[in-house]
Structures are given as structure tokens and as C-alpha cells.
Length: 207
Figure (spheres, rainbow, N blue to C red):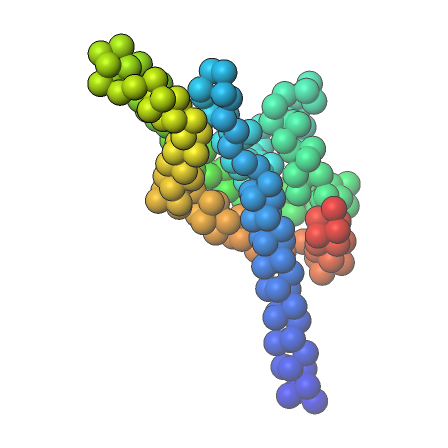
């Protein structure tokens, strides 16, 4: 009987760990849908939420934890994140306080990734404008022909989008974000009852 109980416990732990892995993979796939865009007219790159899905941007500055007007950017992000899948009215005070603390911790961990993401986009856009200015000077000085210039301008989009993506990889923005998110989900799992977690998991996974 004890062996059977141990096997059941091990099986449950494996399932719960796999559930977290599934939720992490779901957010990672969302990252792939957020692609940087190059504006051909302004020659600038835009990146919605700096390439980070809502679940990587949550904090406690929203209506789930504070009295807000429900129309701030933080509230919009929160309403479209895993926070909206928690049945808040069924939480005990201890559970609520624990979730608030772990979300605050997650936000602190993510602050560096968000800051680096913003900085990378600024650096790449500044580099793009500097590069264009340089090519304009080369054309004016007849160092390059108009045909060469046009080809360079055509290649700018691919060149600087590639640079942007490589910098994200180098800084491990998405990798560390996924790691932080996994820790957050683990804390949620440890805080919620088994029934609460299963309901939460189902809502998030099947969204």
C-alpha cells in the first residue's frame, strides 16, 4: 500500500510539472507571434510590448491588487494574462497575499528583461538611422552609385531585423523570461489547492 501511495505521489508530481511546462511552452509560442516590424517610410523598427507577451509583463499595479480605473496599460495587460484566470473570490486571505508577493517578485525579476528589451530596440533604431545617414553621405560624395544605394536601402530591413533578433538571443531576454515565468507558475501551483490549480490550468491552457 505504501508503494502504491508513493507511485501515485510521483505520478502526480510528474503531471503537475508537465502542466507547468505546457503553460511555459504556450507563452513561448506567443513570443513567436510577436514579430518586430519595419516601417519602410520612416526606416524604423517597432516591436509590440518589446516582443514580450502579457504573461511576461504582469505586476501588481492593476485592478487585481489595487484600486485602479481599469483602463491603465497595466490593467489591460493583466486582464489579458493568467491573472484573469484566477478565481480571486475563492482565495483565502493567505492565498491572496502569497500570490501578491510572488507576482511582485516576478515583476522585479522581469524588470531587467523589460529594460534590456527597450534598450535593444532603441540601440537598433539609432543604429539604423546612423547607417542611413552614412549611406546618404556616401551617395552624395559619389562613393557609391544610385543602384548600389538603392540595393543597400532594400537590404536595410532584413539587416537590422536580424541584428535586433540576435541581440535578444545574446541577452537571453526570452530564455530568462521563460525561466522567471516557470518559477511564478510553480509558486501559483504551490499556493492554490489542487482543485483551484486544475481549474486555473485548464482556463490558461485552453485559452
